[in-house]
Image 1 (cartoon, rainbow, N blue to C red):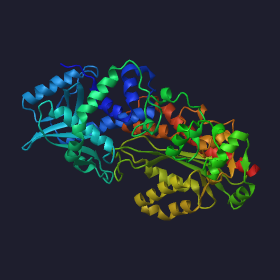
Image 2: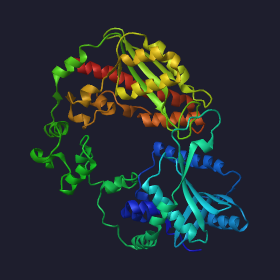
Image 3: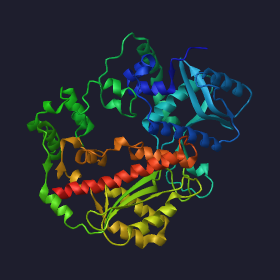
Image 4: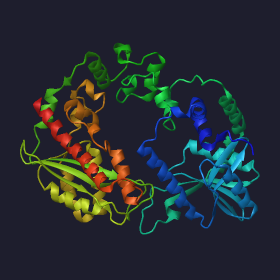
Length: 493
């Protein structure tokens, strides 16, 4: 059998960046590590693929016995076809040095049809290229495809009882779009083969392609000449503008021509603050912001989970579901009490049920409720009203008392160089209260908290459950304690 040179994934990698393809083939050890969050995304994609098989049940599986024995799948697929099988999962084909594995291959009264499954909610141009290389390899292996479709998530599906795969998934033919791409594939393959056979790494500089359509796993290597804090960290500056500066030889703040930079006032503030090592404080606006706070004061933070396949009834794919909150309370300045909620991690218990009941009780009926980024908590509270209309009045009471502690930092009324252009609480806290840091926690940010709790609910989590529950509570607790300390710093102004 011909040696495999390209897989579907390496072909797509090459389309994004030829340097990335070359490094993958020759310097694999330079890749960045896979984060737990990214691994969770990969696992989710695998689970969605398996679930999609219910669309075409009772098929045979061509999956190899080992990831490194992928040629087994090619032989299995041929054997299944020769034996008259009509539904094949992970059907694998090789042609012209390109090996592709298809999620589902089906033969009906019209002939063979290919189905590629994605865990996203729409079809991207990358998915068309992905389907095109599959179509190319399959049809040139002797299988006449009557159609090729992409199967993706219908984000309007609402779970009610067992998952209805016919409602969860949308199946859309991409045959005509694929046929426009296929003629370009042979030349592209030959170009990639020549590239891979080179003795040296292609001279391709960093650019927008480093993160589009996917974040490249060689960024640490290719970006090592970029300082940790550079023009690429300028807040809210368009990516195209950042690379325009870079292509003109500007990387550090010192190289920026401030008079002709066309940066907006907040961006100029960030740059000049860093260059001069100065802190900017707009006392008048901060005083105005603080003067109307009404005690008792509450400091509130939510954590949410999400899943491509809905776990609980009355939920949609990728819907953010609250499962945890932390609440610090002050009946008067100086006093501090803490309450918290963490849902039971069970696929049979909707985490929102007890969440909303305890939240209403803990928040009382008077006093301001401080959050950090009001749009998030307000949005989740409005979601709860749609699910639990019986609590409409109580939830509206909470919504009406919300105030956003992010505003003074978002509007740059308080800015220090340590904030690095960000108004995320993960930057604001160590900048204002350096003795506190998320780096001291096992769980350091919300994405990790979300993926871990989702794994606990689905039974995929393999760590220490009790310790992880403690870590989740400690992380969320710091979010609200951070607001307490940040408010103290603002009051010192």
